[in-house]
Image 1 (cartoon, rainbow, N blue to C red):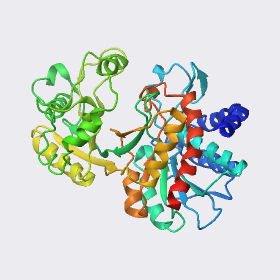
Image 2: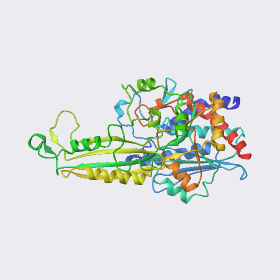
Image 3: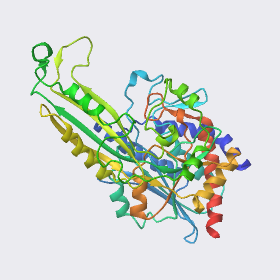
Image 4: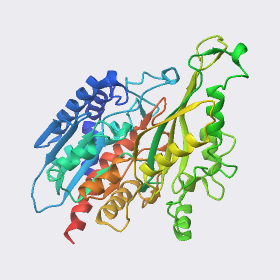
Length: 457
């Protein structure tokens, strides 16, 4: 530990300068105008990997945004770790809620503030710097490959095919991922489960144009009113999703596993206070942690209709739209769930409107075992840095490509993330504690050390 601590102390300012260069690139994958930024960010990652000590690094094309691949192969007899990360980020809207410029990183109050500071440029960058340390101190104990993609925030639509086409190149013993969070700053955790995702957009079309709400209101269906009613009907009074068949394949978690989950530290009052809400809500019969970890959900992510500009404009809108995501648990198939949603939503729509449901991206849930050398290596590494053994934890989030890795490459992933719930990922004022960033750089070399040792046994 003394060696890596000294290396960090000597190079911390350089690390931040290099990270800030990366953060300044507005690599928003969901917005077409940022396509040149995606390429620029990929090229920057190529330079980062080469500078860190990779023998090979290149920007490889896909049918969408490019993938950055890098490697340092020191001995074919040694284990190989494949590091996965992504360089694309979420949009910054609503920009007026940011306290700093979204793509001008600053360090304030012990945190790095910028879009991508945590998700996932900051966390992926930790791996590059930990790798650099091991290369320059001649302590790298196994082979390392990097796969940094540019479409995670829009479902990794190109990566599955790219992996299939490059399966031999990507051969590894484990995929190491830092794109998740810990329970708390003083409660390290390893994510052992991710929920799947089915994402759809709905459009409710009424009249062929916006109408005068006084002349036509009450006689013609208002698509905004209809959409609100349809959405409200998607949950019952117990917080359960009302789509027929939605729960048919849901994995039942044993009482023993639920009891294990309940041992993880969680303070409901602090949770509510941090979010400034009066109370929580959700499916009856489950705790807050269970609702976001082992149960499927349905939520509106965006909704719009009619006139929303300054002042008033009394119209009956011609159409209303919403974006809806369903987080899924093991055994639920995202294609099936999207189809069930489509059939149900179209079936319950009144004849006064026309409903169109467009499925977007999705992915399967993922569960990682805790009895593997990779999990044991991650657990030992985090315990050395944080002074306490990490808690296995099922996250409510989704990384759809993780299950694809197992299907296409046949490789399990270990999800060793260092983010915190307070990092505001996907929201205005995204941040990443500097302490967590540096702790990640300290922990990753220990993972390699323990993983290489365990793989010898």
